[in-house]
Image (cartoon, rainbow, N blue to C red; front, side, top):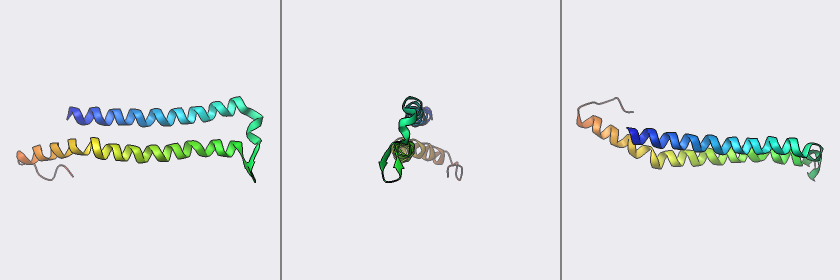
Length: 95
């Protein structure tokens, strides 16, 4: 049970840290660049629009990474707990 808590805690911290840093960098660039964010990049797209989309891609990538990491690190722990519970005759609790 402790391995499951440790693994899930570590994954949650990594997820929150990555996304917090990404959003913080975006806001910091907004403050530093100020008027330069209105600079056109391609067509009607501005630098500010590009910088707003970047954290969205980081969020999407971190969600996928979090899900894959949970499947590889937490699911085996849950399977062990489920098997241990079934050895004691506990059924239907772990779904």
